[in-house]
Length: 250
Length: 105
Image 1 (cartoon, rainbow over the protein chains, first blue to last red):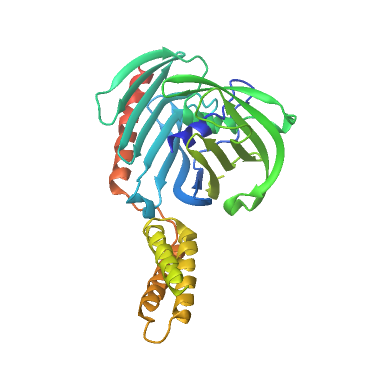
Image 2: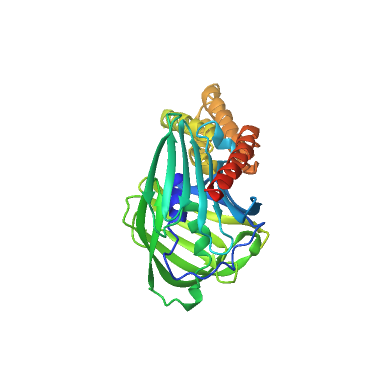
């Protein structure tokens, strides 16, 4: 599941995105996550992405969250309860705080990044072990969750087919460079939104987390909201997809 | 021929059991269905008085298929996890403290 989130995260451009007009507080997108098993696409989990406004004493921030939970029938075999969240500036989507809480079977991991002046102070603990901290420079790179939302601010209507963008994502305390290739438009089913014309974007990375050429694809609705309608992924342990089942608060 | 059909029905019934136990949707229809087909053929090929084994294999395969169909009709849902929900609430309160501290740096 964390690889799915990483694939989602790879959809961030260093530049070429405008000020946020697509992401609004109160959004809720629900996806069915399926995995290719024994020749069949089997539904494993539900992924929920939500946004809400959070106020501190000085600022108003946008809280972005991404939650993955296995369907109850899978819980006895392999329970997943992953929670990713990021607090960002509502206009620029620049993160202040990012947190990741992984619970996958017996594997647990907690991660916290505090963004300050181009640096990240990270705290990480695995399997209930003692937390480790470190500080590293990240420049303009974003965390995993905010990158998913930042992608929606990119104006793909001006892209030509085959046009490639360079991406930068911080994941597992590492800066990863990836590319996104605009592949044109396609009409696909988008849950309760019906059949929607979408931007088709292929994601590639210099990491082993992704496999194949044009096998990791995200479809964003070709409208102002740019809702991720479908995500297909190919990772070392198999292939799968996330399909939108319900979108609200747009 | 009858024995071969009984063995095949038995093998596919055994293969079908883990498919029924595991949440693999309708994938188990294939082994359970084949088991039922071979069990029915074995039943028809069996002389009177020797139909007991294929009869029980038919019942087993039928039960497997019934369980698969019933399980397939149950909608996929995420169980309400109060511990997880509480963890999210606690995390949010901690986040607000971190954000306040960050602003005051």
